[in-house]
Image (tube, rainbow, N blue to C red):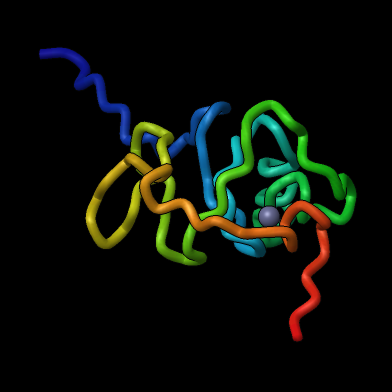
Length: 107
Ligand SMILES: [Zn+2]
């Protein structure tokens, strides 16, 4: 009786998706300071929200999602908590000029 090949995902793959806690966009853990920030107990944010980077990496399109509604699931995909859907793009929010300008001014 041998080992049970258990991959609970607790070790955290190097390449998984997460939701930025600031802007709510979908980000890849490999494209920003995710692991460093987690190690230091800082909020995990995307490269554009990270004060050390301040720039979207451009490796894939930035997709904004409803803040706090997504989590990283066991296989490293972004999952909509309420529905269990991994098709996060169908939840994308269209942000007009504000996102392009990188300006969060609100009237
Ligand atoms: Zn962000």
